[in-house]
Length: 332
Ligand code: ATP
Ligand code: MG
Ligand code: FE
Image 1 (cartoon, rainbow, N blue to C red):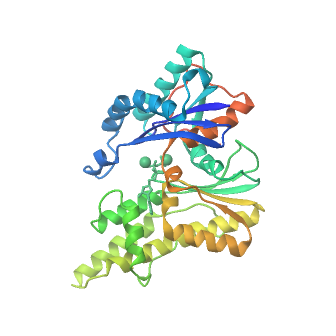
Image 2: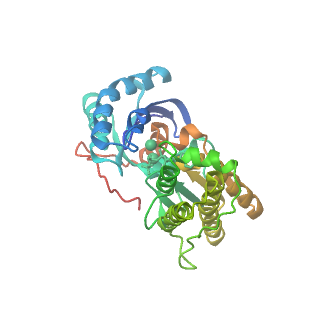
Image 3: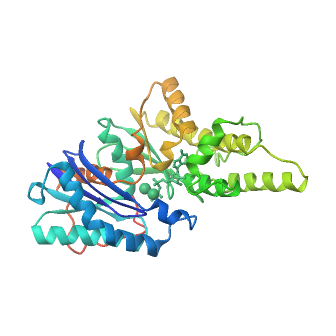
């Protein structure tokens, strides 16, 4: 079974062909990161326009690289939320147009389900599993007992993990997106700056990063008031230590409570080396298997959307031509 995946929820225009939800035949990603860099964030109108310019060629390129034509495609899976509404609409409109013109079944996919299913392109899923989704817009701990079934155990009450990274990076005058820069800087420092850990209520799986972000800003501010300097590498290391400790310990607690056979890591922040190493160590100590997709499958891409769409295909869950972009689409 060949699924054509389409993803345009944020600033990546992507199309992919995936076989049986497991094998990536192509995964073309046209990133707009360079365009948005000078604005220090994604500009929605600019993103939509670029998607319109790129979408047709990106889909053609995905088919070509896969050595397939639309005649071979069994279904088209497209992200219909959550995301920027104008950006989502470009992918949804393209998918509907092809579906209608060629009589190919249409499937609507949740973006976060896509991030989770990126893991299935690496290893078969074993249930129950706990997935930690950490990206620019999301921080979610998800329990899955079967394919396509998602139970949100916890989520962020304020900033997403990636957002916190980007804001702290901005305070340290690092370029956007700041996550990778903090990660690199953290390697050169020691976590000796005292910063809080937001554990919240003892039984909570929710997250909060805005207090930590404020603590970093206050630390910088107070130091400059006193005419002192703080080693940015130490500050980055301390921030990273706080973020990864909370993310990892809550994930491990959930894995234990629900008897998880697997822990999955997903989303752009899964690129973080501090997080990968810490989660690896803790999962080994707990004796639970850990799956982390390669970086190219952690950030936004259409192969993960096709992989998640394959589950809908198997269950016969298809969308009508009234499919619409839903910016705040819930996962469960
Ligand atoms: P969403 O998936 O929630 O819609 P998004 O698509 O913008 O959001 P991704 O593309 O999955 O998010 O991830 C981008 C985020 O990942 C950015 O905030 C970026 O700073 C962060 N990030 C990337 N690499 C690293 C890293 N090595 N360490 C920490 N954060 C990182
Ligand atoms: Mg992105
Ligand atoms: Fe994403």
